[in-house]
Amino acid sequence: MKKILVLVIMIVAMFFAGPLISQQPVSAAGACNDKDASFLGFPTWYRGLIKDNATCTLKGPDEIGGLGNYIWRIVLNVIDILMIAIGYISVGFIIYGGFQYLTSAGSADGAKKGKTTITNAVIGLVLSLVAVAIINLVFSLWS
Image (cartoon, rainbow, N blue to C red):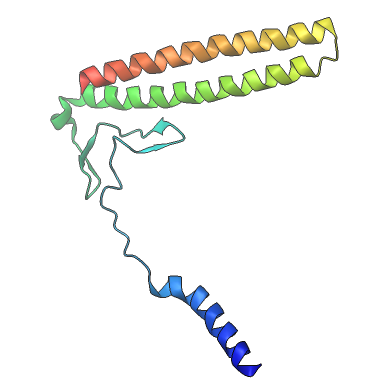
């Protein structure tokens, strides 16, 4: 019984200590890769401005074509982020309108309210998707 208890303790100790001993080294190389960097589909504000992925340094305005181009690139990135956020909010309103429609309990006024919410949210979603597509087109032509 004592041998089994020692064996169980050793197995449990190896289970918890094993990952601590065999840690893989972590490298920050590629952490600033601005082409693939995104969070929930949101691009980074510095997309197109990274000079060196290893050191995460940004290009200067002279390397982009002047201060105006530098500022416009940041503005396009921020607008892209806002349009994607509007898309997420539109999807939320579609869900909310569906909830209103389902919980109207046969009330014509409640059903109309839900349909109106869904219609307006779909219009907002389409407009935000078109705006994101236009911004990405401008960005790809400009890069």
